[in-house]
Length: 466
Image 1 (tube, rainbow, N blue to C red):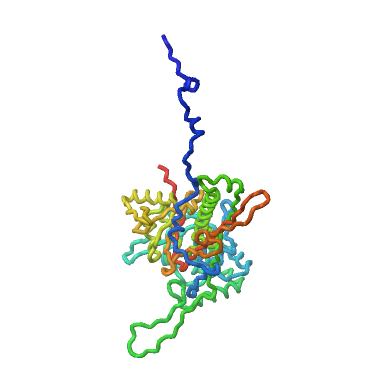
Image 2 (image 1 turned 60 degrees about the horizontal axis):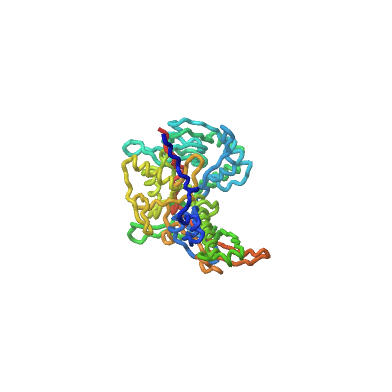
């Protein structure tokens, strides 16, 4: 039997020039340096950018009497939770209480309750007898329509509070029934505990009594403008005026900067076929623009996630984002311009649409076909964080200065400007032949009215196990 051995082509006599050797004499075709960190940056592209001369933008509003609309935070030590005393000032009736001992005394009187799903916490029509702080979990607020049918309203979640009228009105009743949707941890302050606190802290009792004397307000918490209509004859018209907020918020332009270093030998000798300095600057600018979009979403001072009014934050009825959830989010403002979500959240929403046999029609934005809901583009933004528990948020924005919406802030015409509100400054050559450039980008964002920005919070994006 004859066994044929494989021919080793490497050792065989070569009859022509190899491609490896020929490569040494060939001119290769090169791409520009590629960068995986470049995203679509839809938020930056969709925001109307407003020129800010002087570097500061002031948002003037009508005087509003609603204060303390933030979330309440807690200290959690194993199974035990305790409200942070100063966080109690996020509740409107306690806003302005500065005495730490008083706030600590109030915090100490809260009692913890761990409830299973389906527990009725309060019932509509019963006397309101406690202030409720939600540490963990979700609670549905359930009402009754004119036909006696139960209707579900908003969903409360961690950081929310309910029953704060207990602090100021001893005769009020529960406007809704509260029922837990998940395992829930609550802290409650009972009416009897509150009465004991008021006896021992007269300053707190005086503060709550003063809080009851509110001026007339509209549904947005703004001072009413007296208007007479439907009258006849010559009645005496009620005089009025429009009061302004005496302490308006000011947004100072933020910045992102980087110092780019290039050796003179590289800049002088290695510029064919591509200019090394230009390529280094191009990639640095892309990184700055990525940081800008990250800050527009996440910066604690002006980022959208940290500047949404609590009344504009809602939670999903179950876990993943459903069409009903997005409808509720859109309904909270007029003329929603765009929806912004992490790509995984968009995928989770698409799964819910498929389950419901709903197939949304995409729309075209800047020549690109993108997902949409109710004709509103649903744009991806990977800068929206995803928590370790696979939860994230979807943002709804009304944009534009004339629409009293969300706007981007920048300043064009700055010295050594390379692109709008971005400049490149040559800062010298050191004694090691290193050229340095300072690259700076200036930006911020402003929410002109609270209802211009809404968030669907704590949405679950993980697939459910079979």
